[in-house]
Image 1 (cartoon, rainbow, N blue to C red):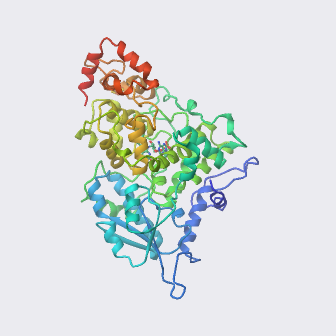
Image 2: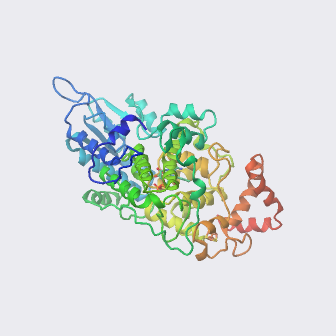
Image 3: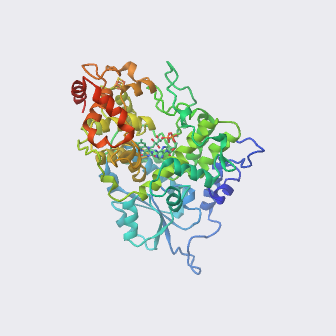
Length: 535
Ligand SMILES: Cc1cc2nc3c(=O)[nH]c(=O)nc-3n(C[C@H](O)[C@H](O)[C@H](O)COP(=O)(O)OP(=O)(O)OC[C@H]3O[C@@H](n4cnc5c(N)ncnc54)[C@H](O)[C@@H]3O)c2cc1C
Ligand code: SF4
């Protein structure tokens, strides 16, 4: 975390209070996120002219174009000139994204335009190129978050400012991880460099990673985790208009109430509620799944983070302060901080580090197209898949283990084409953006890179799902059956996956035992027949 970021957080609060008790061992007793709101407001006030302007006429000499995932104050902290915001109708129509995602993007852009008032130049067109033709001033941009967008702005000769919205730099990533970038190596180096959760040169509590404490199954017979509800937004007239405009746009999934933050104040409110009320329970049940509790103790902050409304340093700092002041246990704070300072940063840098052919990698030669029912998130007889698809259909969100061990694992077992699946994840999830998909979908969930991101394929039989959820008790299948009418599609599918990919996985030492178990199965052909019923 930079000195500036730390200093900026030491100012007084605005709307949402992240309460912090004074702690003599930890001096950063601040209302971390609120300072950003204040910085944003002062940027809006334009008391000092830091945009490039003609000294005689005061006219802007440059205009900053903000993409729809660059909506927070850190994208304007060094600039107070006019701001270009473009709503591209063609992009929206072409991509068939989830209705909730399209809503968040349009609502975020339009709310920012309203907040910026006269500073905003808001253009609705078919293409970005058309919009840019209408602008007289030279335009500069903050480094976009996808390769195609970067190539586009470079092809137009626009000035590209360094990336924002991440804690670490590409140079640090390269220095720390070398030829074989491993998450754990990167995360420890990031902790050392930022001082986050460090006591001198050692990790707080003596361990770098408390993952082992964070894998508990849900409490027995619990229908919900019983933690306070997440923060929910109140829709306004902007949302009403967006909803009406989206009527004619082809989208995926259902329209529903907006569930994620689209303004800076909303993002701070969501952060405040999470840190104060839900963070203490974050760690323990991080991997657990309950039918009656889609959100569990997750933060739901991926949307405001990926829209650029929250800057990761302030989120990390708020969690660390909660731990230092005794309001959250270490396993919760470390678990949460690892997601952001570790996984999120790691995936961002991987996106740019990986070769440009990475999106088309298909190590397991998986060629099956995504079935229409999966694409459209229709119902499935497999209860775990059915619940998860319904949640994505309704909200555009599901938590990490549902993404990895239900949706991803189902697709991996059935040999769905990784590039098609990647595209589906990007469109179907409210937080889906190019940079975050590749490592998570192509690498981690589909093993399509042959082991760059994950050291082995992430998939399991029904036993894991039974242990970590309450799904199986209401299912027509039995998690321990691999053959016959009651065979669990995940259990049968697991053995079928191993049998189908035996050659490709043979050289992976972590797959030695599963492959040996598979070879010993006398009823493997019947299990594979059972798996074939579920494509
Ligand atoms: C197949 C698959 C697809 C995924 N697709 C996306 C995606 O489109 N967008 C996205 O932001 N995350 C994605 N993730 C990562 C993770 O599942 C989501 O970030 C998380 O579920 C979002 O919910 P949350 O904000 O409540 O997260 P929490 O569980 O509260 O975690 C806190 C934050 O950590 C960050 N984070 C955690 N894990 C990851 C990760 N693996 N990669 C990047 N950031 C991470 C997110 O910003 C998240 O908000 C994917 C993971 C898998 C396995
Ligand atoms: S029995 Fe199998 S298909 Fe049914 S919920 Fe359990 S894991 Fe899923």
